[in-house]
Structures are given as structure tokens and as C-alpha cells.
Length: 398
Image 1 (cartoon, rainbow, N blue to C red):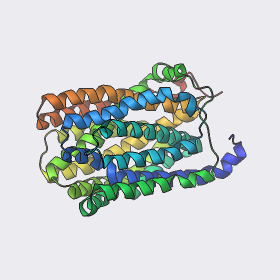
Image 2: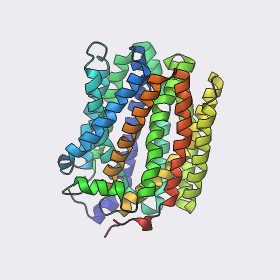
Image 3: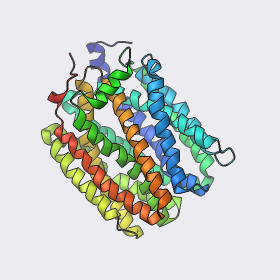
């Protein structure tokens, strides 16, 4: 369905608000469970390197699917992709319940998660990038992230509480119900489609050329940061506090601390201070990971988690502003968005393989020390985003 400028003007703000709501509900449902999945697998008896292999399978399946289903993606709208992603995540959550009794699910459910990630991330980013106001990109990203954090900061706490009171199966079911309801409001707005006649060569061009190399390098920092911050850091906290309710509380406190920073940096980005905010936040975030290499007490871990969330929030708003500016500047936003998603998972395949080797070879303490040291170095790659300028693009809109 094609939309004209009048339709876009009328629906734009309301559609962005609906997208805020969808993301908030989705991240809340995800927050109830996702941070606890590694702990769930650990409690089932999986070794650390096997847990990393679970997420490696997710990354491998994502890259394979991205190229295999390319013709199908071209026929689907952004709203339909987000809608179809919900039942896939529900199957993933429910499948986790039976990994212990049906071990083959360990290899299947990462496939379901990969297909969910592919559909939701591409559909959401395409929809959001085309609904933004060019003059308020930073503020709208800040508002999106702020609303998401406000709704989501309590999710790990409630998730931990639900797991303690009712167990993982009931918590998985509650999260599944919320996910299904999250995407329904989007069908009241116009649909957008990916670029027609999607070709693998066009995606590879975004990965290797188009004057976007510096931003792609910053994407390596983003991708590896999600693995270490989203997977290994919660595991590290759990090993320190030793129970899921305390883990949920620590994660929630850190998320809440980032609220003000998230919205404030959005205004800075629109005022022309995005590059300065990105540079300062990158250096501070790298310093946080260096400190984490040497802390062991629960109190220090809580403070580190709060500090890390504050600077990470600033970094993500500044960096995401650049991401969406590029998406709005190129001729085919969908190709750029898909190429970035593929880049992130290609990086994770290499990085997770390396982490698996470290987890197998070293003690848990040494493994975390090495991982946090790598995080301190790799987060500095965000600085390459400041070397990129829109005028460098060779695929600007006609």
C-alpha cells in the first residue's frame, strides 16, 4: 500500500505514538523473560560455553534466513512483519519450557527467535524511520527510549518475582500474552513495504561500500556491546547475587537511572551536539567496562550497573540518531536497515565463537575478566560514527 504526503502528514505523529506503545509493550514482555534466559539455561545444567552456543545458533540462523527469505520480505509490509514476529517469539518462550525434556528444542528454538528478530527489527525500524520528523529525530528517539525504559524498568524485577512465585512456565505464558497484544494497534495505520526486487548484491553494497564504512565499523561496537551487556553482564550479576529476584532488582534500578539521560541527550542531538555527546558517552562507557573488570562486591556491582545504564542510554540515543538519519537519506531505507541487521549478526557469529573458546578454556572468573576487557576496547568503535557524514553517502535519495 503506497501512501501520499497528505496521508503521511495526517498519520505521522499518531503512528509514532502507536510505535512507542508497541515497543514499550514488547520490551516489557521481553524484559520479563529475556534477561533470565541465560540463568534458566544455567539452572538446567548447561555450561557457559553451551549457553553462548545457543546464542551463536541464533546469529547463524538469522544471517541464513535474511538471505533465504529475501524475496518473501519484499512482498510483506512493515506492519505484517511485526505482527508475524509475535507468535514466533511466543513459540520461543513456550519452547524454553521443554528444553530439559526435549533436548532437540535447544537447536530449534534459536531458529524461531532468529525469524522473530528478523521480522520485528526490520519491520519496526522501517516503520519508525519513515514516521520521524526530520527536525526532531533526536527528541523522538529520546522520547521512544524514555517511554520504553519507563515501562520496562520494572520488568526484570517483576519477571524475577513471577519466576520465584510461579516458576518459569507461567512467566513465559504472561510474556507471550503481552507480546500478542502489542502489535495490534499498528494495523490502524498505513503500511509500508520494503524496496521492490530485493537483491543480495544491493545489501552487500551497503556492507562494503556506499561511503558508509565508518558507520559500519561503529556497528561492530554496537553488536558486541549487546552481547556482553545483554548476556554476560546479567550472568555476572547473577553469580554475584545468587538469586533471580535480586538480579531483577539490580537490572531494574539500572534501567530507571537512565530515564533522564535518554530524553536529555535527544534534545542535544537535535541541537547539534550529537557528535560531542557520542564521543563523551563512548569514552565513559569504555571506562565503565574497565572498572567492571575489577569489582566483585554486590554494592559495587549495583553502582556500576547504574553508571553503565546512564552512559549507555546517552550513547544509544546519539548513535541511533545517526542511524535513522542515514535511513531517511538513502534511496531505499529498507536495504540499509536490513544490511545493518545482517552486519550485527555476522559480527556476533565471529565474536560469540571467540567467547565460546574463552569460556571453554578459562575459569569463569578469568572469562569475565577477558570479556569485560574486550568490551572496554570494542565500545571505542562507536567513535567511528563521528567520522561519517551524510554527504559521504553514494546512495542518497533522488
